[in-house]
Amino acid sequence: AGSVKDRPALSMIQQAEASGRLATGDTLIEATSGNTGIALAMAAAIKGYKIKLIMPENMSQERRDAMAAYGAELISVPAGAMEMARDLAQEMQADGQGVVLDQFGNLDNPLAHYSGTGPEIWEQTGGRVTHFVSSMGTTGTIMGTSRYLKGMNPDIQIVGLQPKEGASIPGIRRWPKEYLPGIFDDKRVDRVMDISQEEAEETMRAMARVEGIFAGVSSGGAISAALRLSREVENATIVAIVCDRGDRYLSTGVFSKPESPLPTNTQNFELAVQRLMGLPELYVLFTSDNDPKTGKPWCPDCERVNGVVERLVASKTNATLLVCHVGDRPSWKDARHPFRTNPELRLTGIPTLMRWSRT
Image 1 (cartoon, rainbow, N blue to C red):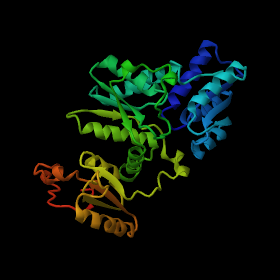
Image 2: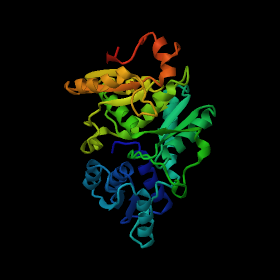
Image 3: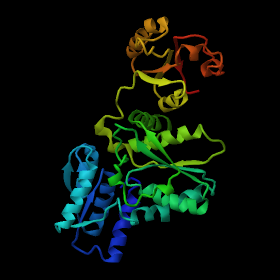
Image 4: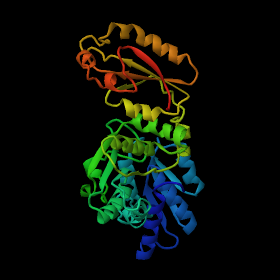
């Protein structure tokens, strides 16, 4: 069906059949944000099961259409209410309406990645993998892959991703403690990184523009985290999971959102530029931070120029403006400021506007 959830969906059904939990004529019930539901709907159609899928109403129309195409019955809960969806699935099972495979607590979910994804990563990297990066939703991918890779080399670092507070990234969650997936074991994750909505979406768009990889939002989050990680380590082999396809998100507008102006700072500048490469026209405005007392740029020239530059770039077709704040006055005046010493920039003053090229 085209996502990282295909393997666990098939694994859960096959193991349920083998154990006698599923029999001909049964109905499957599952709470899903989309990809597991699509995969289960496909497998159910192949094997002749009916299926009822419960999902938040803010999930994309493409996901709903794919499930319906496989014959699934869809039940909606309020936007973002995955906890409610999970509770409702259990209530329906208790009422005798079907069998819940429970991707969140079913060990046959991570089993698919322990027996498949993990060995493939080990083999395809020649055992040289040093870091594995994965978005965390049900956590099946990271649990199963971690178990295998750590078994081969305990020094491999396992990095999980969760959305920053307030972010809504399909497929990954910041679970309340009482709803942490039963299959999750925090001992199998060495580090957890927070990913913002903007960072995930910008990287997702860059993957399509620059690499020709048309993937979804959680995939953008994973690749962004891998890029961030690559700046911290040397001689590393970092593997990240691309979770699903971008065509499942077209109706949400994430591939056509206006991207200008975008803010960044000295510390995050290089990552911000990486995420925006491949845009038809990318401009970077180096300007001062705002004075915390006045709320305005501490540099008078920046205050006069910023708005003019934003209007100028906005008037250009397909142009994007990245606004980089260089810091407060003492930071910028320091001769060791990274933008002053960077051989590619060698900034001597602000405000400065540059047209950025991929090379």
